[in-house]
Image (tube, rainbow, N blue to C red; front, top):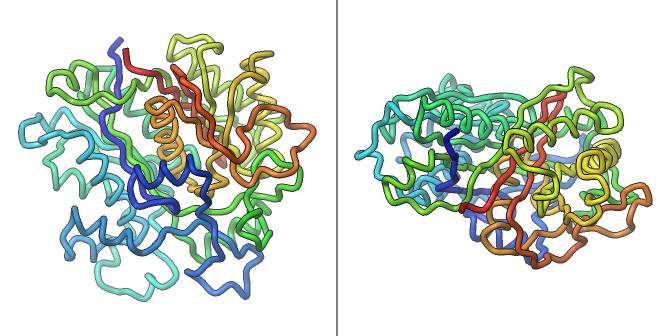
Length: 402
């Protein structure tokens, strides 16, 4: 079976406009939460989000012409900026590569064409096009393989990476550009998640998102995008690429249970983790860190804790676990990519990011959630969980490259 490796990463989120800024903010315990600025708040119960500063527009402009960007939404531009960084990071000269052997798979639920952007008439059709990012990247770099997006709620960019791994291992492609983008903060998104009682109504940015704690009351939305470039080991070595790590295992499962609630006692979550371990050919005791889905909702945090115990047994208490959603918000479709990048950086640096805003522990939740401060620990493998509405689950396992 072909070994699949990571050769490029790119990030845009509330902690920073590139991966270095994102990572430094994360391990220093910073939070990207603030009172929402994008929309009027009078009609909303939730008033806090992890917004991305508009300075990110300058990053997108490094890679794309003004005319091209004018045909996109803000969310799409975040995705294009993250992809631009990842492509730079992978060091590939696409003019020397076989574009027919390269694919693009991006997680997109929708590209946030709403609110103020509804009044912008030019390029309306292109702005509403969910597959804009794969199409634009393909045209820019001469990529003639499959270019499409996948939409499986908050597991979408996890699915994108898993699909990329499969496409490479079958021999169909040598490289797959994967990633995902979040919705931008908008009236329809905030009101929609409030209707299903999923988001915190705590107005304090320092305590609104606090996964695995006793008084948590829901997630806080985060804007952003992440991009991870995958290649076969042979292709990466042949072009002299820097190999960051291996994507050793991945899963894509559906609980077939409930549109918004996870399967009772974390059974479906456990199955996703076990499937990824099986794909990697690894035993549970090889995992040194778990980047949890950790949404700060009552059911997710409880059931994910139960799932980790089901899979890892007594060793579950020895594995550091954290949710970076406390720092960057729930970036929805982008979560799998951004949280995967956190795992990649943890492998590279030997630093594990904390769960910030961790105050009063929940007595039912008794794992090592890395409270508030990063820890140093050399690990060989890390697992990243992404669990979405509709019962869509994905776990990615990253391993140090040998």
